[in-house]
Length: 427
Ligand code: S3P
Image 1 (cartoon, rainbow, N blue to C red):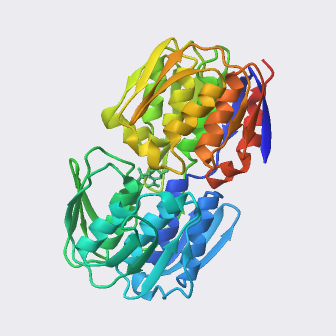
Image 2: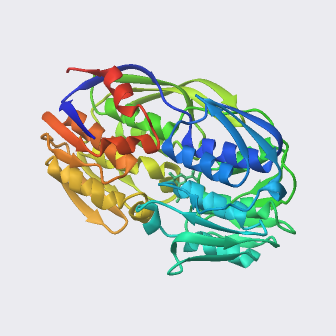
Image 3: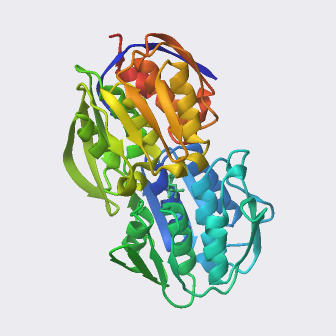
């Protein structure tokens, strides 16, 4: 599907976004591992989350899902049943890596498969710790899907993550929950902590001590779970307002977990007017309305500790950098090269087509601004975040741009283009 976007356009208005994708995966998976009925409200309609629900069904879990409500009949991990065919994780790295952790503790064989993009993504990062815990787990060429998991008896481990990855951390914790003895995971930098929060919410014995997370194995007790709006989806709408004086967007009911909102710090540092209003809490997660008013932006240098706290929003920083005065430099973001696409080269390509001046590094990008962008034909690179970040770039460009493969937005944000249309004004 192709979508046309006319720029330059000004965004003004209020919006809501679908439930958080990361938290939705966890609500389904932990709901399946808990004992009792887990009611979920605000579940994300994202394609990735459907993949997780379908895999759980193939493991014998009853999942009822209608609209944004779901209920899961959890019977504890012991009662998951051997799947009769490969578990299709689709495009979703979170589904594959988290389920690998769950299945590492189950005494049967399962095979996890994915689409073309997922089949190119690195899995050694979960194979290694789960093997150390005692699971038999094989990846194609030692690193790629399909993953063949034969689980069973696990022992708790102490593991220092070589890269900050919430998916790997979560896989280890989900295995650790079923192991003998405690598991300790140490992170180089803090990554999103939704798994830890939800484990605590469902009664697990978990402690955080600086960079270390300690988990004692045990049972989870089902409880109703609410899912806040997805900050990573809201970020596209907020970014559309940030560099344009006169623009203003308010996104309501968004998750503002501190391990997710590095992007707000960056927006402020670039000079945008950011407000976090009406703070509340659901399901152990902070939620608020987030408002951005556009200003003239300045370039920034970014790297280090903040990167994992805004990893999915970095493509938007590249886009905003084209509108900011000075040279923006992003480093320490090598992980972007192994997402659903190589997001550094994909964004460099699309921004160049729009006339931006960019230089790629192995672990980031340099972008000079401000730059008058000119409409172009942009590729979605079969990557939801590249599609949506490119759509935001097209709003800043003069003329009509075309986004190819726009349907990929459904992987995390079904309805993105109509929500965007609802706040776009002609100038
Ligand atoms: C996610 C963790 C991040 C993020 C992804 C979702 C999660 O990946 O990029 O979109 O739900 O745990 P990594 O764990 O590979 O950093």
